[in-house]
Image 1: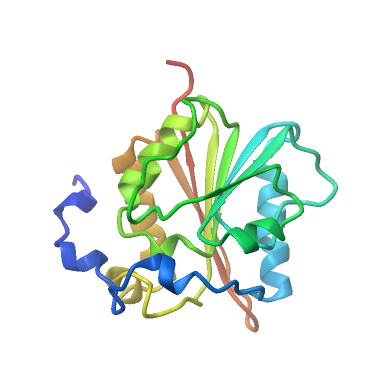
Image 2 (image 1 turned 90 degrees about the vertical axis):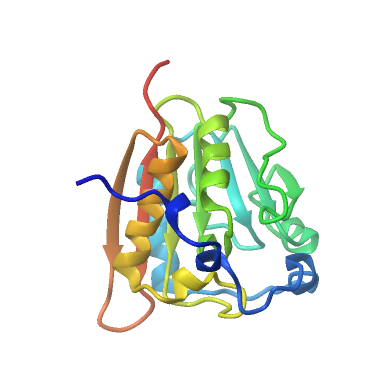
Length: 211
């Protein structure tokens, strides 16, 4: 049976309890961590295995903390986020862009210019995930991965309604559907759910090879 497209969901599915412009909410820097050390290590290990050393990396919805493995060198890391001060505090970024993806999902980046992209513990705030993922598919090279990771924490007034209504497995399925609708050729789901501490769910999409 064919899975439904996210476009079939009502607009209210991606509404937020706080409808005020996102730049107001993110204007004040939040130099805090949003997941515990073990969860950070889980994300870093995923990146170690999936993001190519020496590649050009796009860290979307970035902040002041880098989850990239410290020992791996990349050709360049571009961070796009909501707060300039947070991005400035991230030492792994070579380029920093401030953009509200809910207001404008179009990335100011060339086609096929990145070898991998990642979104860590922020995807729950996207009101236009398919449009954003389609842009990521555009800027990624053939066969490149998009690694989306998330936990069970969020700013509830800014997370979209459907996200708050789902559990971790449901959220994984939602993101896999969004990637499919955006044109990713394949998706994979992984999970690390410890008895104590913060869980990490991951959805990995890959662009089509060649073409």
